[in-house]
Image (cartoon, rainbow, N blue to C red; front, side, top):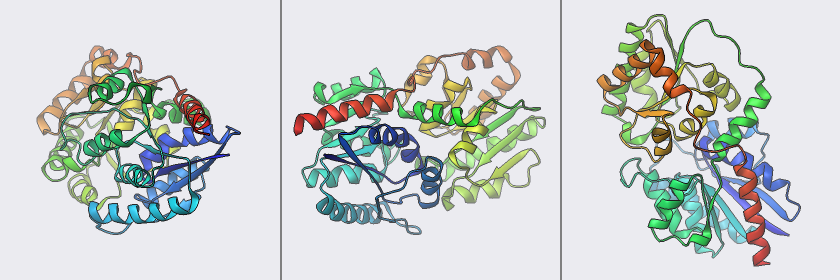
Length: 365
């Protein structure tokens, strides 16, 4: 029986790989193992509990204030040890994290094929997002299977010289995970006031970017006292410090600890609009009919911008206030974004990925 090691370390990876793990486990010809690095310990554990996933390998590499080099070294040594012991026939990674890149690199060192879920996303700027853009580009050079979520992602890979036979357009597994959550949650409750949901954590926004974002949220909260601004704050201390220093105590701003995935989906679908720098939310929210304002200067997910489901605001205070105000004040502008179709998938990406993996491994046997 062929063994596949699905390796992840952060909350977003776990969300997007959970449907794939479920689909792989259903294949009788595969032995599916889940390996986690623990890059985001508490937030990762929440997601695994939500989706009832138990790791077969747990490196538990998270340490306070560790550098990317320290994290990379610990992941590489730990994964190399387990690859030597357990000898999977395929390693699967997702997205653009340090865990994903180092797992792909370590598998390459062991001459084990690599499958990359959510391949081909690009901004063409190695510093935005940093280090994620570099991680994605390097994984593409190592992967034997590239699961591109959209045709745009596929075309990026082709332009870079990735072999066409390795590329499979599947849709994004974030939509699969969202549909699983929606089934569990049931009907959407009726809200008595408009709610703006906020998330933020990207490294390229640390410092001045986060200060500008927080200033914009305060100005909006004062301008729209009847609107509730809800912010589940990322656990990273670099994010939490400016958020709590600037936003805590404003009457209609609600700061909360990170939610489990199902709680977050429940909050997301009851929101009027979303301010975020998250990639996954850009993919999920269109299926809920909720406009997304992306607080970044670049996005590797331009399909949402082109389809009209999201708007790129950057981190400048005046721009964020202007775009949010336009949607809160003008119902016609809001409806134009809310009524667009989701360009990221139909909820069947995980099944497509599992089927391709089976064919690939059967061809190796």
